[in-house]
Image (cartoon, rainbow, N blue to C red; front, side, top):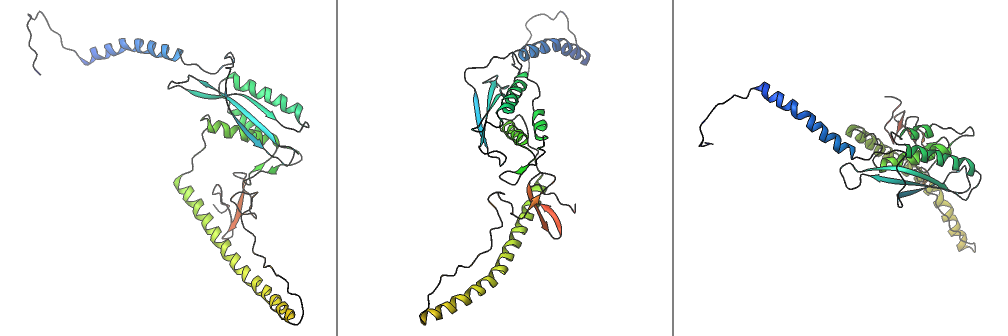
Amino acid sequence: MAVKIDKKIKGYSVITPDDKAREATAKAPVAQAQDDAQDSNIVHMHERIERPDVLIGSTYKIKSPLVEHAFYVTINDIVLNAGTEHELRRPFEIFINSKSMEHFQWIVALTRIMSAVFRKGGDVTFIVDEMKAVFDPKGGYFKAGGVYMPSLVAELGSIVEDHMKSIGLLQDPEMSAHQRALIAEKRKQFEERSKKNSEVNAAPAQSAALAPSLSQSEGEGRGGVALDVAVASEADPESADNGSFPASASMCHKCSTKALVIMDGCQTCLNCGYSKCG
């Protein structure tokens, strides 16, 4: 592109790479100051933030065999930097309600401590591991889905973990495509084998039930009374208490889920893919 010069040239200079470097160095403090000013407008979670009049909350239900009545866990979140690219949702307070007054004292203490930790700011995800590591000396239980809970406090920690994952504060470790394909293949093989075993076991049962039916029909012709004979079918391998895993499955020590079955002479988990044979 040609540029026409109307004025007399009094002097000139050539811009070298060193000149460009010095210019960039001179602009760096200005850019840093602008970034610092922008960062200073970002609100981070700390204990001096006042509670808004309205908070976003979620309520979770816990029905444990250790208590007579269900627990209802409500976690309220505060939204920081709303409407900006730095918008962040953080847990602000927690409440636990139940008809059962047996655990009222320690539940009130626990919720107040947890709420104080949430409002303190910083990394609050550590509270999940601390709660899930609490064990009941009387023993734990399996919740719906076959996941083992060592205590009621551990299930509360699991609820907090699920909530933090839902708001993006925690990230669930992703399985590789190979692991997902392997688990799907193992579950398909187990279902096919269970279906085949059910068909084999159902054949003798139907034959045995047919004989009494015929003899009773003959008795009816001679003045006897005919009885309805029900053929007992094979139980569904999937239990309602264990979600989508077989009722005969045992607990996996890796994912604490009741999904460990014997396949090809080896213990295999249908939830996480763990195999004792490697």
